[in-house]
Image (cartoon, rainbow, N blue to C red):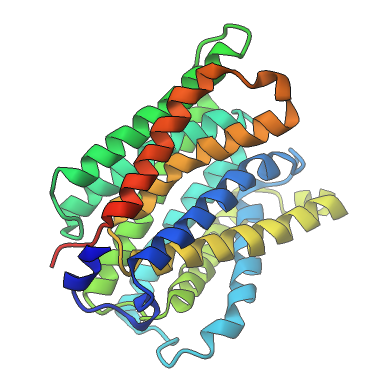
Length: 315
């Protein structure tokens, strides 16, 4: 927590400090981990891009009441351009997630998510919003080893089948690149004073612009009539994903981005395969085995080091 005392000036919604940001990201990892199997419950016939756009619209509507309370909720031209890029990052990730959910397992997707922190750290260094030091890369490496250990345990229990990288995994990795760029752009815009001081406003506009952009692409390449196949169950799942996943998770991420570096924020993705492991044990208790222990211990250790040490952006 000591790093919070010598950080650069921060927006009002970061006044709770580094600890609140870390606790929020713990909630984020739980919500994201739960969203992987939920996405897989949606009907295969639904168009993923249009579905992503609807998800963003629902999330934006959920945030609209909070946004109007902020004095700087109307973005200027430069901010809108940056929100457009951030919206494309969100659209790229969720579009890939919707499509890959039917071509890859939940555990393999959450394991590929392990690449996001390192990608965010490297991009953050290039953008000048990440402190180049040994501690955070060490924590990222520890968490990555833990997440890969969980992937190894999953492969060992999958009838001896090795972990393979297919088309579903490839598409989702492109989504991971988009996900890593999102907090880097957010931090970069905050440090230059382009983006709102309110996490709710930043989340609202990135989601709203992303909904429009991905919706336009979806209208051009996907049949709108496919949405008529949406069942009541699909609609309820989409509302949950929009409000309980997209709106809340990206608000938590934006709040944490105000006081943590992109690498530290995205490091919580290491907990996502841990959540998938817990869900797997709930569904199939017979899968509980000691081979999961090394990866789980490394992941939890990395998160504890992250919370204990804190992480803030360079001046």
